[in-house]
Image 1 (cartoon, helix red, strand yellow):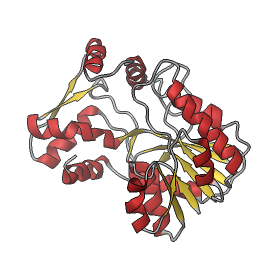
Image 2 (cartoon, rainbow, N blue to C red; image 1 turned 135 degrees about the horizontal axis):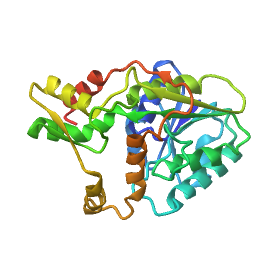
Image 3 (cartoon, rainbow, N blue to C red; image 1 turned 180 degrees about the horizontal axis):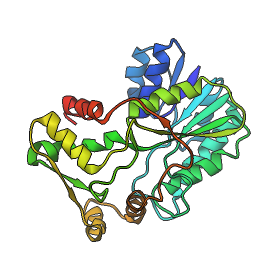
Image 4 (tube, rainbow, N blue to C red; image 1 turned 90 degrees about the vertical axis):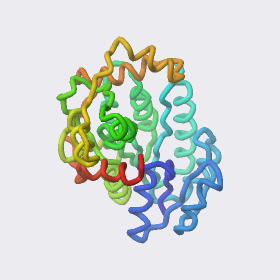
Length: 285
């Protein structure tokens, strides 16, 4: 049996569907019963657990052949990341007591970076869970292609997408969440000893100009990318309700300056940008 956290999200859901299609038993770890109903209908066992509740997580992980950890994203963290540290403490306690056979934990490209930024939460994530005396794989995917969901409405309605990634012609590794789910499901079924890191990118690197051009072709209209100037970021993020925008700004700096990058040679996914954007358009974003 495989216990899956984050199952209501894109990656966790993709892993669960892949395992179910292979005839594997899946335990869906959700915060409330309603969130699990759709998965129960697909044959999943349901375990109720908040990611801060070590006791509930221990019960959810006990007896599992493999556990997928998808830490909940915290986009506006308090300085020092106390919210994320609390989640990591609960996970460490639960996994230590439950002792599943193996763990795959979703991390990120650039988790090894020395400069503090939003993704430094995953630097902590890897450090804390590496202390477990259990086989663990940290899966570090590239920038999600699905982040372009935010660009669909302005591309469709105004023919312009605003880009924090810059310069506009610079390509960075990106990957589809379906590729992440497929690889994570495969890793969960493997056997290994100790700690390992697996990095993952898509078939080719992608620039903001590539995203705009692909939207344009699929929408049948002219679409261009436009830079959001660096000196406008803080005011913009605060206007959107962020209290501590610096980590997010430094994350974007890391991609733009190249210090948020892969540490090792990544695996290559199969799904192209065209497929992902076409799906976003069909679902309306």
